[in-house]
Image 1 (cartoon, one colour):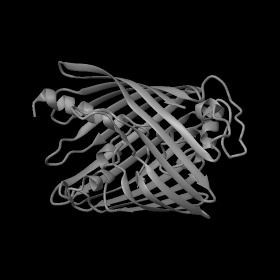
Image 2: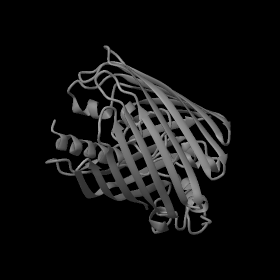
Image 3: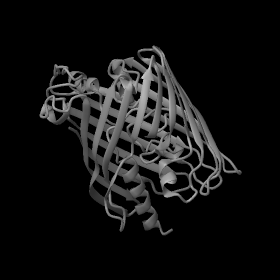
Length: 378
């Protein structure tokens, strides 16, 4: 593949992997929130916020002022944090809705080649209904145009779950739990292990939630996209994740993955561990390591990801994330420096700026990306 085409292909990969709704933010461990389900309907993080999560966005995270949101009789939240600023009032009943928009600016360069794009990376409507242990969840949004393919409507997640006494069963399309759910889907512990934006599965997940632990086990006949494609690319896969909360500021995570062979890839598996520390209220440090073993002499590669985030003042975060992926006989290793800033002025929107510098082993040129995002959650 010519060098220019390779660069363009890589850029589109970054665009569609990064393009997602604001995911779970593990940095909030520094505020003693150890579980994604504290604020999201999904236990793996990301997607629609619960009424509590909406309320927290103003009370704990927003830069400009603390907001004392009021609970409604239907279990929702009123005021600025509510859906469409509380315009629908109580007419939606127990149904919770959200709209996620992400206009973005992307600049990339490698050697003498550079380009810039203005993109609408995300435009989703999310909804949830929760009653007596049952939760029905779904989202539908815009799949951006790719080449000659026009933009279309697309649903990444839709599932139903039932929870009783801390034991939950979920079925549908979802992203299986593995490791740390960084909001940045290009992190090496996500994209390179097969957990990027479009790697949801159709399957069943069983989980057990206790005061200081969370266990999640998922079984699936394959990635949702491979199943829908119908050309024999789907392969059985299963994941397991165990989280143990040592304290409100120390978390340990262990994960495992197995994927059977398909028409496109050999059988492979992964195992890893992670630790989250919050030594001070404004500082969170997450470190994850994984080993990815590919069958049929595909070799073994190792992944290392660290994210250190510091809240300079209320609602203003700085982060640095060194990441490494060792190579195999057919794929070179890559090292990345990622630095970013996140501003949360109000409950409904935030500004995100990230700089990526990737350097492949044996390559003279670094691949550099600047991504600026305005994320709106209405």
